[in-house]
Length: 191
Image (cartoon, rainbow, N blue to C red; front, side):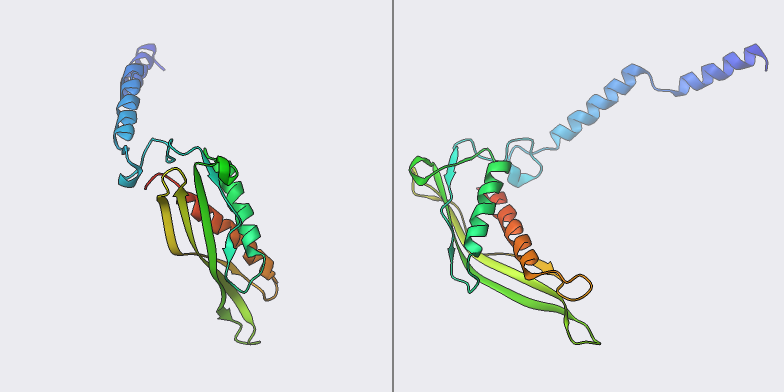
């Protein structure tokens, strides 16, 4: 290959590459566009701010009440909510006397419904466990509710038939975990 041809080819390849300054400029413009797209209020879209209010530092979580026929569900749910608050929020879980807020709740219903049935055997293939509750997160300093929901529900699927043979306890565990996640997500400062 001719040396002058090689130099011309290298010059053409180099002219098509963006310079370092152009790359930095492009990255800066894109970065500012992304930050500019964030809202200062989480209710208005994506936000780069902390979703939890700084005015609350602690929460008390007494054992939830249970008006359903399924016993001891309230203990599992209370434990899951406390763990979720501890691991995913800035709030400290304390006793009521030392807390800024209190989270109270009542499990109002736990129901199971059949989703599908095996046409050959007539046995249930899939079932859904649905847990419904009412809860209120109250500021103990003012007595005003921060968040209150009635009929708050979640559900979990399980497969009791062969080959999976999932036990009801698996659906119960999943429903408790999902309800805890959803409930604690409502503690974000959209209120």
